[in-house]
Image 1: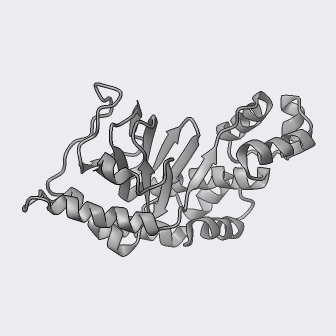
Image 2: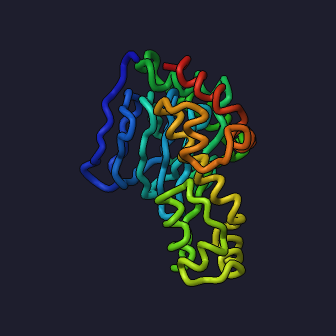
Image 3: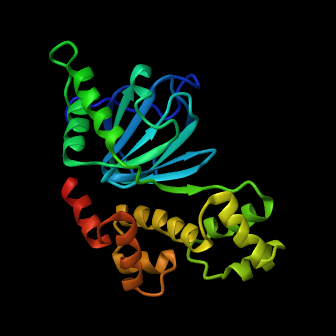
Length: 260
């Protein structure tokens, strides 16, 4: 990839902005918690990335871009060999976008604009700014499509979700989790809805999709991924993955290979 800049995993100051550009990062590469004076878009042209904040975790496969507002503490972890592109968004343009971390689908136009911003040096004054304005316009009109996994505050719910984070394939029912953490099934169900705004089934499916994206990006087969993430058979995994991501896991993995 021409004209790339290396990424710093440990910024020297909490608000030090990352340079606009890109790099190839190995599977499992991590950027520690930090924040930026400006907004930031992070796009995995190949591979996938997870962005963690105090509000939970967002995952962006190769057909989505992550948005983080200014001064919002966050960390990144990359899955598969990742072609990561970073674009800083000046403060005067940040108001056009949502004021919380999110993930947006990358249209063909948006993909080409992000690649152009991070592949080539600016040859005419103001060219990057004009192209960035197009990117912001595209995102401002796009619907949020976040693979967001919110994190709870209640100690009982935190204990239950921690068990699933440790082992996403764990087949426990909500009642079984409740017995383990000292809460009733009804209480945990209520907490999932009131604190996380989703059902237990939806939260666990999203968690498993997060792990599935990481496994697929690292080259694991569809069948192996289904088993590792807790689906009883590949067909049910394919159906769930397609509903959330918008394409089958096989097609997603083939697109990753093509992008590399």
